Length: 127
Image (cartoon, rainbow, N blue to C red; front, side):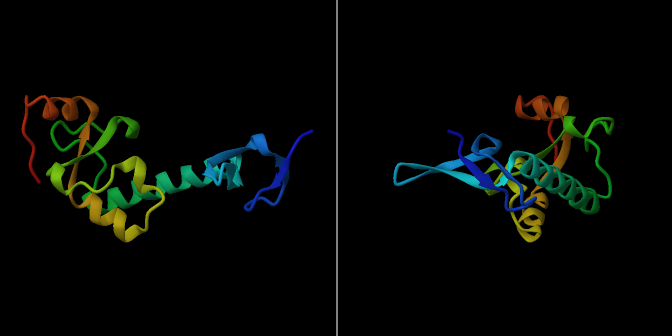
């Protein structure tokens, strides 16, 4: 017997296996309101929106140290003061624009290589 659920986004009735789990409440598994396809589309659009906010904030989407800009997935936000970090980029997609911008302003953009070198103490970076 298959269990079905209606997606809150596309309105289609789909097997429960088409939905991401959302934790348990009172021992019973709960599921996200959107099916996997709609959820992934939503997450992708939010990531693109965050990239747009980053470009608007910094005027560019490139490494502050070396200028790398070929692959956006190789670019990271680096918190200048780790004590001020409230969330990472991967946690931002579900937050309001105001909270996202507050976090972005604490960061600089670094490519993966320069980011690793900063954390290893090989180079220093400032605002």
